[in-house]
Image (tube, rainbow, N blue to C red; front, top):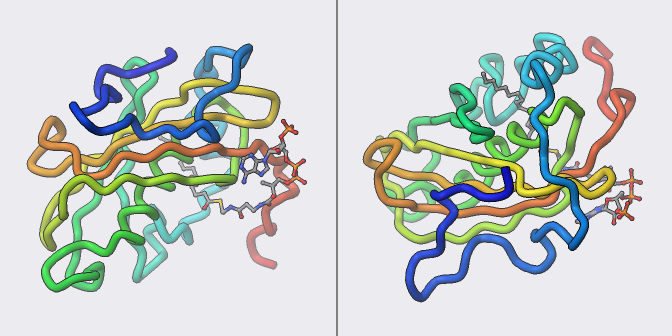
Length: 183
Ligand SMILES: CCCCCCCC/C=C\CCCCCCCC(=O)SCCNC(=O)CCNC(=O)[C@H](O)C(C)(C)COP(=O)(O)OP(=O)(O)OC[C@H]1O[C@@H](n2cnc3c(N)ncnc32)[C@H](O)[C@@H]1OP(=O)(O)O
């Protein structure tokens, strides 16, 4: 897939991607690997320390990964009071972390391992404490080791208003990039 209906720009607002997060001419159309999620999870070998989604990360966001439909990956998390920036509202950096996780997940579904090279975020509406944040992410193109990814976060339900849009470039790395567990 090269785009998502949910990626459409709001009137008067640009889409999430800048020239640096737009696939260059000639970039490959992303193809999700058969069992890409399985490959990704096998690479992580049961690692639960991720600040975004790990169940061992006590102070993490505890993002819950959902499914993949038509190349769009979904996940969600609930804003807790320790996530506040301005009183009553989620910190922008927390939301950027959540977008990083969602976009990273969409890249990993290609069947390789990726780290964030660049992450751009647009904040469209405040997200209150207690809100369930519904994230979607999809890959827009692949150029060598670079995967171009976009995503959005909605509140008030999976089809509620968009609160955050993001675009990023994720870089493919070998397994050796990561610190072996237990070391
Ligand atoms: C049923 C559903 C199930 C769902 C299941 C889901 C499963 C998966 C779930 C979850 C997955 C996990 C999700 C994780 C999410 C969080 C990710 C993070 O937080 S990652 C930590 C932060 N990022 C770093 O720590 C990187 C730090 N940087 C580096 O290590 C290096 O700079 C690195 C590896 C990125 C590149 O270094 P070099 O030496 O290997 O390669 P060089 O040659 O510099 O770059 C390679 C290509 O990339 C481009 N590049 C490099 N950095 C770039 C940048 N910042 N922006 C754009 N392009 C960049 C370069 O221009 C080059 O492109 P040219 O091949 O020449 O076309």
